[in-house]
Amino acid sequence: MKIPVRMRRLRRNPGIRRLMEETSFEPRNLVQPYFVVPGTGILKEVKPGYGLWHVSADKLLEEVQPLAKAGVGGVMLFGVPDEKSDDPKRLSAQLAPLTDGIKRLKDALPTLPLFADCCLCSFTTHGHCGVVEGDQIVNDKSVELLSHFAVLLGQAGVDFVSPSDMMDGRVAAMRAALDGEGLTSVSILSYAVKMASAFYGPFRDAAHSAPSFGDRASYQQPANNRREALREVDLDVAEGADALLIKPAMTNLDLIRDARERCDLPLFAYQVSGEYAMIRAAADAGLMDFERAIRESITSIRRAGADVVVSYYARPLLRR
Ligand code: PBG
Image (cartoon, rainbow, N blue to C red; front, side, top):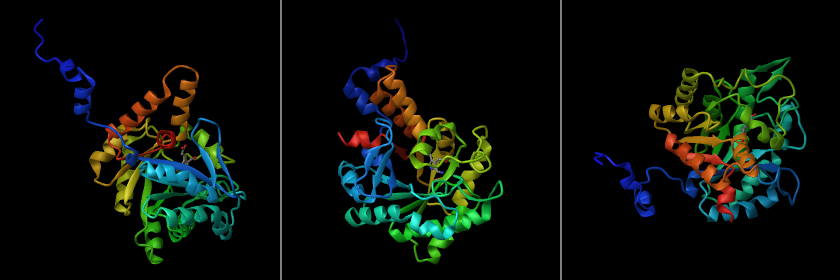
């Protein structure tokens, strides 16, 4: 048969396929999240197999060390306090396990990139990402408190603060607050695109951060709007973000590509708890192979344009 172009020639054997591979991911492209809880001696997967780990500050190093050895790109820490409070004066005490964890990791592994989430939802009684007055999430007071939050994380020694709150103006305010405290080398990884998503369910269980009233639609973005998402990207660039993050990942592959072509900042995508859980549950139900499915998903996120993928898969991949 006369077939002018035969695509299968370049897929003939594993060696040729490997040579022609355009996109892949290595350990350094992955960042592993952890939930830092008060107490000692705690290392527990919230639901076995679903990738969300509670860990106390004293166990963090022994947990992270093998990942660092295996070449993980970095670790992202979320604080989960025992006590919820809406009093800004309590924040530093509520953050103590997290800042303790940051210090311990930085001491022992000074060059391992360390990220810490900067958001109020796990810390407040109402579970919203900002300051609440009546039934409103008020922007500017939230930004002030979040800037203070960022400074506390910076003082503990974190490399990147990661604002996931989605208040307006917080990147510029955090930059100014950090610089004002002499923390000029602390970077801001800003959540530029964060959809009001159904895919955060397992995370909210792990972080005890579900809102007690209403939802997050007045600050997180609607999945319907592409142009609005790109305005968020432009704003975070203009406000001085050092790197951008988009999440969820698999439902926003188009926006990852858009952001990649629009700006030259390093681009992160967060494969969130619900994305991971979806693949895990399908695999548990015998519907697909877990390893193949999760690798395909991460490869696709990289192909869309993400440099770094925050994923609960880093740990199972690197601790075998
Ligand atoms: C906090 C925050 C959330 C996630 C990261 N930071 C949850 C939310 O906004 O409700 C989700 C991450 C995940 O699902 O893995 N604002």
